[in-house]
Image 1 (tube, rainbow, N blue to C red):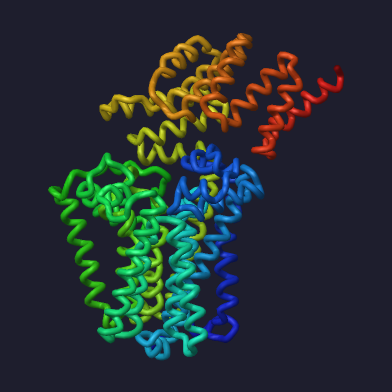
Image 2: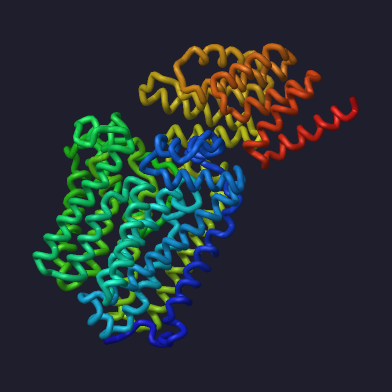
Length: 593
């Protein structure tokens, strides 16, 4: 049978250490220029404005805050400990995680080729030898996975994938082990990785089923053994449920626990969410094979039930794909695994557990292992039936080159928030959140007039949906824009009006901070000080309120009080260049007195 890359078939080029090095170099090549990418969206609430990250309160506090994601948040706290809010450190960790995911995936696929149901096929066709490397390259270079790497808080998706894949790889090695000692070691690692996965993100709850799938497809078909493993899977799922239930402080056998732990929002019913996910999953598949118009915030309106041709057609197509995988299982176990794993990995976030945002690119990170494997199999083992090996080699080079260029270029867009969100509002012009965030970034770029236009557009879109409550974030940013344009009275009137609305302490503190800043520019210093003190009372962890109050006190000659506040700010955020400069100026004034 024709092989694909015989010209490269030497010990040097097929050596796994070289493959792992190439994987890491490829990742660095397309992500190395993202170190200065700023915080986005949930990065602010989960990291920069989260006192559990910058004001360490112990592992217990993190457990109470997010028991199912404690390892991810612990990694953010460690990043802050080493680099404060300098995003370079955060991005270095994310890139490293993506490298490790690639290494784990390569190791898993390399192990699968040695399993009883594949090793004879591998011996017949050298194309199999390149399958782990090509599938891994496709995965790590694909632009659809940028959100899980460059969007800092979505490190959770990458960490979860790392531990998930490592668990499967350890399981395969345990089944391949020839000695009791070696098998015991791999089983122990498998259990450790599974626990780490469960403590990183909830979508890893399907791990026991994935292990059962590996056993059924690649190892024994002995019914008794499969029954024993199935029992172990059920026991593992039950143990995961107990751990999560007690972590969220619910009685594990109560209806309350079932309801609370299997939905993120009550705004979408389970049936509507499932119906919506039928076309959403096909959108994910389309984006993998044709990654055009990628953007950070999709405008995908939740659907109502299954009484729609598009939903029914999407469902039937999914059922056909799953049926095909079952039919292929005996003769082509790797193809069956690729398809079944794709759906299994999507099952938590794309089934009956309603989530407020029905689509996000980072959710396809782990499932795309299946599509990466499917693509590599087609290139290396299917196309040789019709194409010459040189043509296939050229096709592989073009594919990897195109993926690399697309990922590098999109990561470049992520460096500029206005470019990123400007692109988003062009692709999804009716999504209010895109205009809202674009407006905020216009303000940060000192473009208040553009900011007002974007913010007003966001408000109009929200009003058109019949939403009665206001978006306080938009109002805060609109107040900032008015202040920048020196329209002080309009800004104050809007602040007084909205302060009476119910909101979180964090948001209320932001209104008081802006009120204080306006009063300060109007030289109404007493009122400015009162507003900033109110901000600190409402949100004692506010860094901005302290920094602004310190500036005010320094301007009114209360140098010692101002110095103390600046030092408090620098204790939390030592990299704040503005605070350091203000403190240096203050100390010069103090020395001159």
